[in-house]
Length: 137
Length: 137
Image (cartoon, rainbow over all chains, first blue to last red; front, side, top):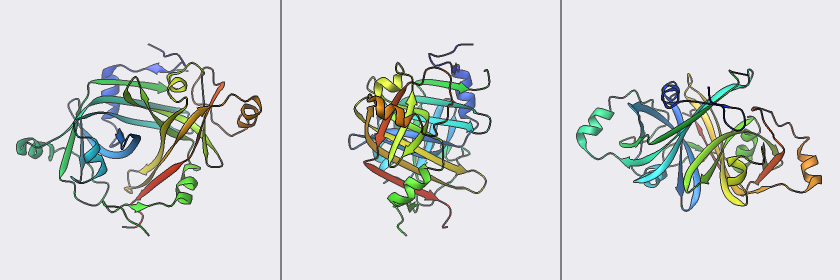
């Protein structure tokens, strides 16, 4: 078991991917007009690729086109002071190939917000890291 | 009531600050070696300033020194498909003045992780925005 400098357990890549698969919402971190920006998004995993569905004309769609972004998900239990956090880094790209759009459309992506959702962004995970709090005191 | 381009309700500054005050955990978004980075942190509000306590030698302490960062908090109810998200932007700075450290030490900052927590970072909110999902269908 590996611990980091502040005493949190360092998760393996497999543990990180498995935890990501347990939650339907994450946060995409990008740069918007030279400022750090973060937006919660519903997502699904396609193997080790994060898949996000959004409107084609959104700030997110514009910002996450062919650029390196971070994607974070976490869960915390306030009462038990336990939790985990996973951050993936990868090069986001918009999906334009009709066959790929058709395939991604069948993923179990939850619909959280109204509006057009005809645009897919995929983020193949290049680097992933995670920490767990509180389960191994 | 203002709606954004995807049909989410736009929260006022007062609503955003009030929602931030309801949760003890947020995520700080910064740049780490030219890559986007995000890290969950326990925090407290001191008026309209986000206060974070961390170890002096952490990646977060190094990255959030005199730089513009984003701070995000959210809550989602998976079953009801409701939730909110608030993002604040501001210029983070390390607190070095002993009187200010003494004052901030009395804030109700929850201790989530082990290790040294002798370093305060403050983020006076310069810009704040938020969205609410699902309560006004």
